[in-house]
Every structure is written in structure tokens, then in C-alpha cells.
Length: 177
Image (cartoon, rainbow, N blue to C red; front, top):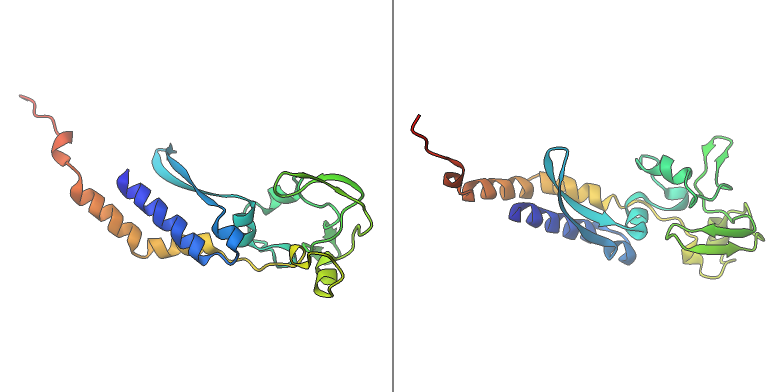
């Protein structure tokens, strides 16, 4: 368990260091250690900021995101982004008038004045307040890189150390047979 917690901590630290945004760096947390499908699993949780940092945002969103299909069919997705000729368009666009839930689960209200308009382009042209909120972000793949880096040495070292320190004698029972 100590080895797993150590690896979990190293993974979270490595992922945070590889994140591109300050919000992503602080949006990771310890999800505990649990038994999962017959294995012990260390969980590092990432919220919306970490998700956007990992997979990108807007027109730079990575289509290989395994949760993308669920996001697109969720209440958080702006249906005006939808499918356009040539495939899925993930550019950030204005919403229809009315209430909606954003990726943080907060209910907001759109005036609808910019419904369907490309807010990324408008932000780049300086036509929006808080343009950084509408600019696309490239994916960092920080968590994937952290996992690869751990598998290339530190993880094996932690396991070997744990096995070497294992009090094997506590698991053997002598019988008269």
C-alpha cells in the first residue's frame, strides 16, 4: 500500500508538472487506493480544468479523448458546435438564448446574441470581453506522459522495493503434514 501511495503521489506530481495551465496543475487530487477488478488501483482525480488541459479545448480538442463521445451527448456540450460539413467542429461558438450548464456544472444564461458564431475567431480579433476564455487550447497529454514516464523506471523500482521489503514469513504457516 505504501508503494502504491508513493507511485500515486509521483504520478500526480509528474502530471501537474506537465500541465500547460495553472488551473490544470491545481485541479488534480488524490482519489485514494481501491480494489478494482481484482487489482489494487491508485486513483488521481482531475476536474474540468485538468480535463481541458489534458485533452485540449475548442478547435484544438483532441479527438482521441475516450470520453469525448460522452461529453458531446451530455448537457454540457453546446449543440450549435455539432456536426458541420466535413465532420465534427469543436470550435467554441455562441449558444442559443436561455439557460445552460457549463463544463463546471454551473447554470449560466446566454443572451443568444452570438448563437452559432465562432467565438474563437472573435476572441482572436479582440471583439470579446475576456478573450482568453474563448481561445482554443492545445492538449498537454500531461497525465498520459506522466504514466509513460513512471512505467519507464520509477514504477518498477517502487514495486521491486516493496517486494524486497515484504515480510514473507508472516504469510507462511507451518503444519505437521
